[in-house]
Length: 278
Image 1 (cartoon, rainbow, N blue to C red):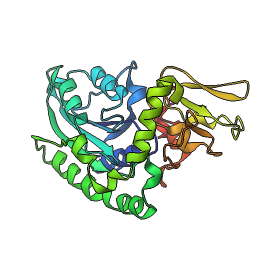
Image 2 (cartoon, one colour; image 1 turned 120 degrees about the vertical axis):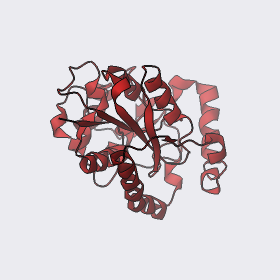
Image 3 (cartoon, rainbow, N blue to C red; image 1 turned 60 degrees about the horizontal axis):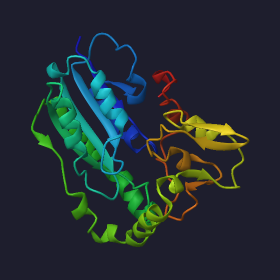
């Protein structure tokens, strides 16, 4: 029996919502990508493979590329990819997925970009009206993607210059924050802008529970980050005390997560959690 598998990664729930929608329309199985790496594949093999992910630094999260490395016989499968993005165009993120699939003899039948509320540096500078409009509009694009996949169409791979996207008026407002961020990066180095918790932290441990790579542990009543961070900012956005920041620097971020995604669904993405809880 033919089977469809939709693998996803998410930090705030945006990509999870798109993945859920697509899996529902295609009657597919929803799988956290980070759980599939290094685990036995479900039988029978899926003949359709989709990946859904956010863009980080204009690239797909590495767990998505690692997931694609685990797909057996990818050359015989219909594959597609969906990236969610806030301020930037998809850039070459979908092209990276395409290259990963082609390196194993497969073909990316379709690559799609779905705009969602921005949740990275400068996200607090966007209006609530903008966020609401994006949350109301994304299903139209997702529906069109499902029709494309059901028709077994091929040939579309969305792309766009990230540099040109940054010149949009709606994005130019981020310039002061971006300059502040890169200025601090030059003076402090990347370690000086690592995720950290302020004195507002109550050691509740929620950040550790929501971290998809299980990269956070509590030591002496403070979270400590390891070396497996994917910069998804789940810890920052889900902290009940808003105590987490990038090195204590104000980079114009506000807490955000998709209103229809629960903490339990986020925690179910963790690498050691059964995916049946998604």
